[in-house]
Image (cartoon, rainbow, N blue to C red):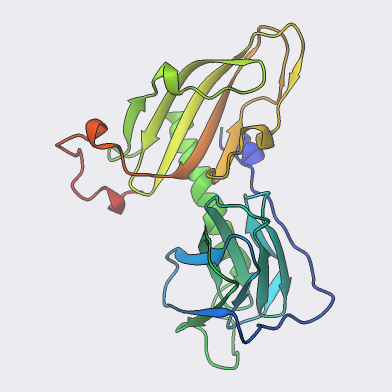
Length: 262
């Protein structure tokens, strides 16, 4: 089962080497970010202009990972340039450098071009001996999604992950597919949504993860990519957990500190 989930996890790597150096314009707004651990880093980026992230270490080859097809992201040395292409959707960006890896939660806003300067207390000034393998740190982010999907498939999610049936009125519409059942598993940080889908068309449907992407998904998993007429499949979607509307909140949580589990 683990091998199946690994094959189906969808994480797009966008890596483009710039032909020339990237410099920040003096007129750009500036954000200073201090990092001391592996926690996600929430930053505001311009939804209409370039954002430049300046890191304390050089980015390794193939060191950019994002699931958002809307963003155009390029790396050069210690710099990452982000062209939002007008998107307003939240997105994750993993950047792997020679010393550390960083998970940025990008929040497009109607603001001017931004320069984000990252200071990392774990990285010695001017470089130094590698403290950890950055590729393994990047793999940790991917493996966390893989493990979450595996636990969902096996029915072994922690008790703090609350299952909830999705109303038929809220079922998404994809191609000529019919959603037979929808269920979500809300954990403290991530939510996994499972849809049982059915091909009601009289033709073969070839499915791609991009057809299910709206901008909020961290990973998308399918147990099959080709559906003949009357075939069914299961799709798993991982997103960040969002607060429930007041009328759907429960007064008693099954775990008073669920974030310690997931």
